[in-house]
Image (cartoon, rainbow, N blue to C red):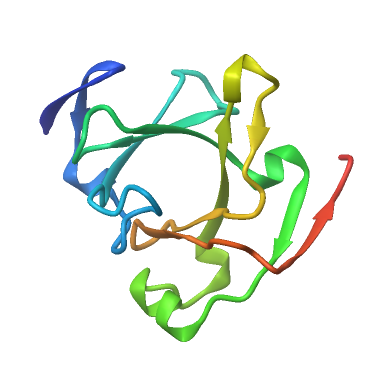
Amino acid sequence: MEVFQSQFGPIEVDPETVIHFPAGLPGFEECKNYKLLHEDKPNPSVYWLQSLDDATVAFSIVGAERLGFNYVLTLSDEECTSIELNNASDAMLFLILSRPDNQAIRANTLAPLVINLQSRKGLQKVDVKADIVFSNT
């Protein structure tokens, strides 16, 4: 276990829990390794994706289904290979949250994060041209 100092204070990082983005994230290509943090309670609603390469970089994220979005999107063979995704059921979709100029919190629905829970690798699917179904449940 390694202790990493972030804006959330010191955090212990088990190498087995690191999420790797082979291409980084758009605008943060140099940040490839992240730790997923959340409140210490069952079923947290918001997570923080803390960069392990730059302590000043962290994103608030939420599971797409938590906001009622059900994506039907297609990943290329290259994208699947990059995150070692063989089964769609191994993937989880997250949306990055932002709060521009202290306005209402917004979710980036056009560029979801796709994380393979088995390989712990992910990518950001930018400019999604997918069918997005909003369910009110």
